[in-house]
Each structure stands twice: as structure tokens, then as C-alpha cells.
Image 1 (tube, one colour):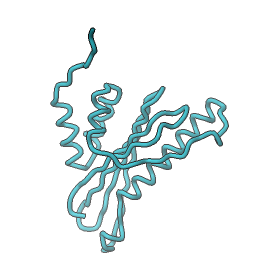
Image 2: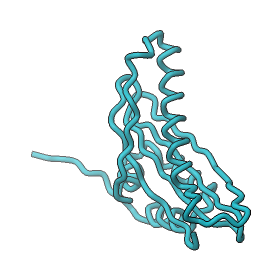
Image 3: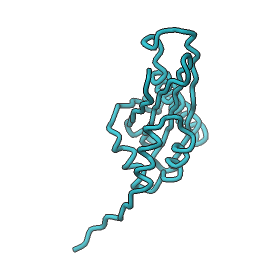
Length: 155
């Protein structure tokens, strides 16, 4: 893996929880370290945000055998499921009621939707600060430097 890259995933609406959006990035740091990260946004009643970072020492293993972005996506899915379980337990909702987390790859504009909603602007700025993925940081900087105006309808 020679370049940093990022992908966006959006999930089905999870009853009692919200709609997950996940940013996954992957980088190569040095000659033997693969690095990935994930950032989870749950758009719902409580608008949640968290993330994680994964570092893999390859010890010369071919990059085709190691896909850090796949591991990051799996970790994101697992963390969403765990957070949903915690919320259900807190609200005394039977765990069997939970929906399965299904994430589908989407276009980068989904980040713009999160930004324009105003619900995750500060969190996206934190992503820009914490991420090692230059294309992701540049994309968020572009959003940060763009002036969005509110849309309203009139009669």
C-alpha cells in the first residue's frame, strides 16, 4: 500500500439507536507498518461519535495479504454492535430486538452531509486532527473552508 486512502460506509437505521456512518482509512507508515483507523458517527437521538486506530507490523509480509482497512471496518462494525447492546441494556430493552449492523460503501459526499447537518462539525474537526490519512484531512479541510448557507422553503 503506497498511498493513504479512505472510504465511507453508511448503515441501515438501527431501531432505538440511529444511522451509523463510518470513515475507514488506511496508510503505510514506514516500510513494515500498516496503519488504519475508523471513525463512527451515529446519527440518532443521542448523536454519538468514537473511533479507533490499528497498527499492523507486517515483518515483510506482502501487502496483498494484509488489508488494514478490512480490519478497521470489522472493528467499527463490532464497536457499533457493542454500543447498541450497552444502550439497550441501559434502557432495559431485550437484546434480541437489536438490528444487525450492515454497512454499505458510499461516496465521500456523505461526509459533507454530516458536516452540513451541523451535528458532527466538531467531531469531524477532531477526525482531521487525529487522522494520519492526508486525503481525509484535506477533504475535511475543504469542508471547513466552504461556507454553507441554510436552506429554507418559502411560500
